[in-house]
Length: 178
Image (cartoon, rainbow, N blue to C red; front, side, top):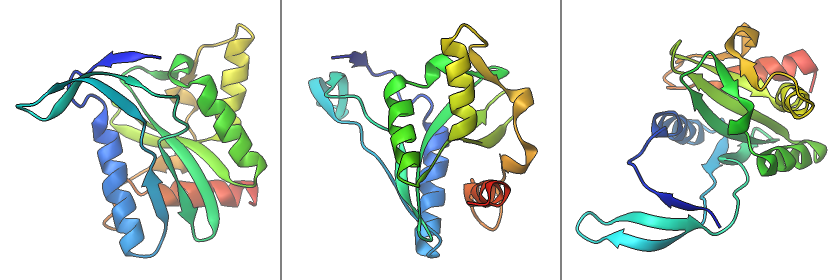
């Protein structure tokens, strides 16, 4: 089992924006999407601050979010990178397996990626992720470059939503006729 030492809430900005957006989607009856908790067993707790300082993950999680958008089952993982690309090593085998199984059940799986260098977020569909992932496994490029991002899938702040990813999902659905 993997142990971890906490170092604050690194990388939580993207997830917090998604959580706020999901709450608004639910409020406006656009989608019901929830954060999937990662099961953790605490071995050390700072009782003064009420935080886990040492623990281990009980099992590998699946993806960060799962839900339903107007009858369409979705699952996705949130990733952040300060680089000019998203390293494939940031996408774990168990996540790929889950997303592949999900798509085989006619769900839509994807990544929401925040490129902090450019202060931009993108929707990357599972098929594209799988292409890069499989290519890397065969000795090819080990990352998904920012330059390959589809501008139709750029995620903007719109309509009162901090990270309005449903527009990118809708564009993807149109493009693939799903």
